[in-house]
Image (cartoon, rainbow, N blue to C red; front, side):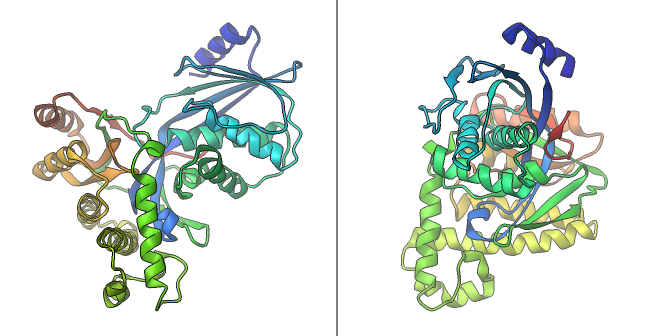
Length: 383
């Protein structure tokens, strides 16, 4: 891959790349729509992601190219940049913008990106691009940021530059991922621990609905507002900063304070999901994959019925998984509205599973999904 990308860089810029970086995508094993509500999430980095090749130029110009998109950007270095429509290069440009706002001097750079994450699949291609850009700039300009600093910066890019009210999970997962381990993140304290992710006789499989979704254009921000409304109502009697500051029992005692039906449903999902993550951590640490699979199914149906971010495509995949004796658990992963589901499939049964889910999904939806083996991998780094 490195040799092929070097050739592509030469073809575009007529010189060799000086630096190579890679940032993974991620799947969230459990704990969905929790990160901006101050709770626990359990993602893992995967072996698909974003490659970045860099070379310096003497023209004081930023040149942004991708092998995945036709759009290009050539812009002189200025003090501040603004988002341009919905172009892919807004993500790296937002990172550059924050480096400049923080007072760092940046020289002319030629960038080439290549991602093997399916675009719009919910596997965090945007966070992968942001983190690899921030990591690279921090490296080549000796900016002195820690990994956690870069994670916080890239969250700001999403919130302030892109305009999406997302949490910190995606950036955290692609920065701090570890091979063979899930990353249990406390999104309130911004601390994490690695959780052994020995799936025993199962392997992690990703099923892409091939129904793309763009979060900033979806109902994602509406759900975030519902959660905020629920929190505001609960705070009339509870001294809390986030929904996940309470557990399910306490929520049930105070849920009468939430007078809006949608806000109540969103809050119930969030608080129960946070409790599921705690139970799932115990299950993984004890090697109880059957219990972990049950929690995955429970998470999916809560996202379907209470948070209402699933859809017929994701539901069809989970319905098939429940009928397949070789599957321990399945759920939608990511923000929803399309994107991907994940499943724990018995080793040696991938081909049979893939054939079965493709046939079932195609019969119900009208077109085929894509099915991938996933390997739990390390976070961002130099190649």
